[in-house]
Amino acid sequence: MTDIVRVLIVEREPLYRRGLAGCLSLDNEIDLVGSASTAEDGYRMADESSPDVVIVGTTMPDLPGLALATEMRRRYPALATVVVAASESDDELFAAIRAGAAAYCGKDVPEAELVTLVKRAATGEYVINEQLLEKPYVAARVLEQFRSATMNDLAPTSAFAPLTDRELEILKKVSDGMTNAEIGFALGISAQTVKNHVTSILRKLAVNDRTQAVVTALRRGWLSIDEEPSNGHMMPGLTYSSNGSGEARRVKG
Image 1 (spheres, helix red, strand yellow):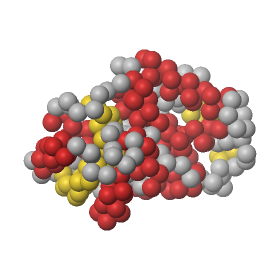
Image 2 (spheres, helix red, strand yellow):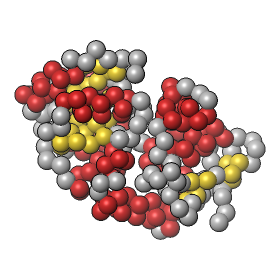
Image 3 (tube, helix red, strand yellow):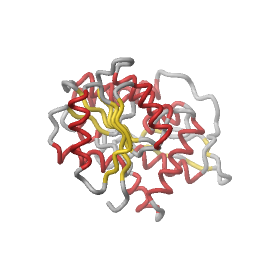
């Protein structure tokens, strides 16, 4: 990766915060734009420095860490979030997924691995999906959430989506677990263009992250779940149909 990744750290413990800063500063492809000990300071620094990735601890003095991760995604939909837990657990991994985190790890993560997580998150990858492959119990809970969204939640409110054909095409590929770079390669556009489309999708649907965008599209009938998972990823494959005018009709099935 040639672009410089701008990183913000929001972590309660000063020694660990400094350790993270020291680790990241050794990589010439990472620019540490700020380090905060509270959620409020984190929001302020995010406003001022526009980071690509925020590393969030789970023990904040003014807000539970996963609540901070959720709020960061709500305020800054294009910001990738890496959650660093004091002690990893399946329940927390599930909560991190729901918060829209791009990656989840413990504080004992090796330095090189953390740097890799940050860089992959910056490209739009959801590394957290890979962790599900090693956690069948958590994966089952995620899949159940999708089933509930399509079977038991609110009925579709409109036959038409506010998204363009291209945005629906990208959202379909998001549901297949593809990264921004992979989507760009498949569609012949840049990863940055994909990122811009994803940001537009989140804004139009008034959601915080990619997972919620997919769930919203499922609920309203703009996308539909395939019988079998697509590409071996945990998120279900989806299909859509277009009315040829930039809007999408509900897929019947």
